[in-house]
Picture 1 (cartoon, rainbow, N blue to C red):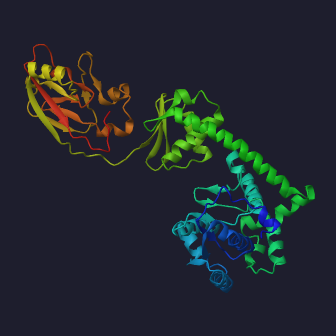
Picture 2 (tube, rainbow, N blue to C red; picture 1 turned 45 degrees about the vertical axis):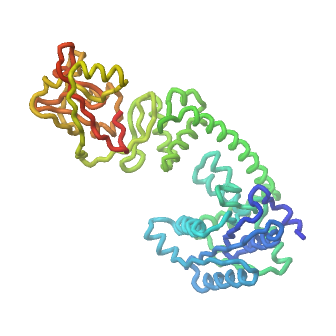
Picture 3 (tube, rainbow, N blue to C red; picture 1 turned 90 degrees about the horizontal axis):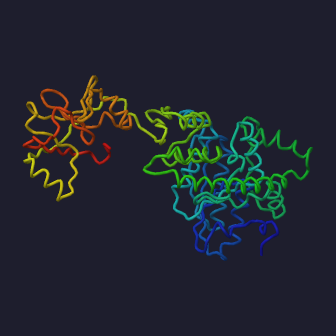
Amino acid sequence: MKTNLFDKIYTENFISKNDVILIALSGGADSIFLAEYFKSIKDEYSLTLKAAHIEHGIRGQESLDDCCFVEKYCKENNIECFTLHINASAEAKRAGLSVEEYSRNKRYEFFNSIPCDKIATAHTLSDNIETLVFRLVRGTSVKGLCGIPSFREKIIRPLLNLTGEEIRNYLDGGNIRYCVDSTNSSNEYSRNHIRNRIVPLFTKLNESYETAFERLFVSLNEDNNFIESEADKCFDRVYNNDMINIGILNSYHISIIKRVIIKYFLKNNISLDEYKINEILNLLYHSGKIQVSGNVYAVSNKNFLRIADFDKKKINIEYFFTKEILSYNKFLNKCEFCSKKFDFCCDCDKIIGSVAIRSRQSGDRISPAGRACTKSLKKLFNELEIPVEIRDRIPVITDDNGIIGIYGYCVDERVKITDSTKNVMVINVDIPNNFNAK
């Protein structure tokens, strides 16, 4: 029969019958309590319980003893146990990360490697309060203020409405053993400093501060969920062909605009900090580009925002193409009856020497048919609004006397088809699947 404390835990929306639950089991009070809870509902939900423990190699023998404690606990309770030993300090230094950040990444990497339906972690209301304080002093958004999410994908956190003190009192009252991490009393780590020095001061302002924070989290999450749902609707309106329609986007509130930008870049596996977000916001009002990371840029042409990958290496493409010579009348018939659209065709008899295809080169110029002018390819591509990052890949068609056309876009005045044309050359270029020239 459940205790009153167990009754405060809500898992109805988190788990299903016959789920395989992986418990993140450090051996500390919170994780042991979480394991005890799942033991109590195991038969009711026909659950299969597993546990994952990481020995971080930081606390010497104490850390190894905790690992042995977890393995013994799992054996006694018929829970399959998975353990991983790392040297968090050395490995974090090599990775250029803090020990806390590296350890967290390693934990979830390990958890996700173990087959299960749900990963249960023992984060509590106390942890959530510490997280809020940590994010406040470092700067965060409304979403960041919402604290630790109760679930995300297959990760569930059933204890977010319980305090650490409640849990320890329950375990101590039932003589249920758990491990105590000696480093918890050290203020070397940011979280410990918040837990040991800052949070205790809240009781001077409000003895029921934990209840107050719980109400705050509920309110923040309600508001944030509404804004996110509106941002999702906006994203569906403005996103098309992997670009964002700037005109429509700019009709929304700045709060929605920022969220849409974040969603767009996350969709392309790119995370943005506040500085980059503000830079991208400026692109919504003028054409230009800003570097996001490496060769990846955010590019705007006033109408659309897109992500572009500029490979700074000189592109040397070998184009494969076919030529077909048709009489003028046959060409006209083919156009009329086959609804054939040719990406490049010209007056065959006006070609000088042999035809070749290459990428654009510095100084390239063309006289587009019917335009009565000569211009650089750079200016032409600007007029045609061809994305900058693909310009070096667009096939430039030449003969021995120079450029005769840009494949898919225009033909030079010198070789254009007229009423006096007798023979037409049709060229088809084999465009790579990962490149769209138009």
